[in-house]
Length: 414
Image (cartoon, rainbow, N blue to C red; front, side):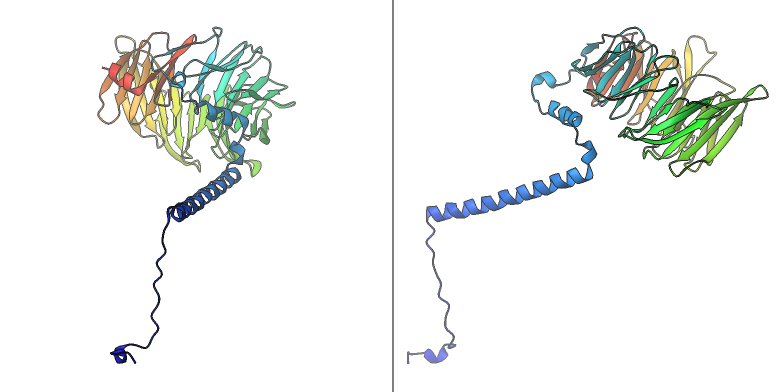
């Protein structure tokens, strides 16, 4: 027995192995770890792609792929240049709009679509007597309004995707952000009506009227509710009606009448609230058609109206010396947010990030809704409309357009 063995535990001690880590074994271990991470990332990517295809399969189409590829070209030629002018090759009756940061121009001879640098992605040829447009985030709807060819054509950025020719004239098209739409037209044996389609151009609803005319329609963002503004006559006076339908049946969910009023516009807001405009009043309704506010228009001379998301804008002529106009901005509850006078005829007004942008011939007025401060930017008198696009504003005329970023707008406005 060894000395002091009495103090030992009697358990066999574990042997400590010392592995000599050669450069080859070290790099092999690193390679195994990198391989594990690589395959893990690949698996996560595959699962993400499968989930994307499953949840957004309808968005995987050639047009969206081509649109995405446009932004994968990092050459300087694709950078949007502030102040660049875009010239349209259109006739004098062109209708101009903005679709997904692209300019669309429709006239009697066809459709042209340009990006903000003026590069044309689509040019088509057809004959329209009275061209009109409606634009969603996804599609352009070009149609021959009234007594023309009774034709509706639907385009994405690069191509025509659908065309309809109806038996009777088209008197309006309303669209929602997802690409669903309603067409005002008649059917045999009826005075007027509307037909609704989903974003895949499948017919989902139709309604016809024997003695009433459809003046305006709208479709909810979900594509399941439809709103028609109708007019008829009784005892020599107008009768306006607003009717609400949904896909559950043909019977009206709600219907309201206004005696002695001529209907102008119905619009369903993203909030679910309903705006109904006639020549006598602007009315604000909740989603269940409870009246929230009624604005009397008989005491003032309404000139123009603009419905924005969650806002309504009415302009009035005034008796003040000079060519001045009064503007009222309302929220969806009918509350007045802005009530101001401006020098000149207001051609267009839009709201963006707490500011009210007002186009008057030859200038753009920027009104801060919090401070009531105004700044003015000089414009070419030919511009009659504008729209917000990524990072700035595009100003529109019959002959062309110009994109200016917000930095240059704020620098030029005084």
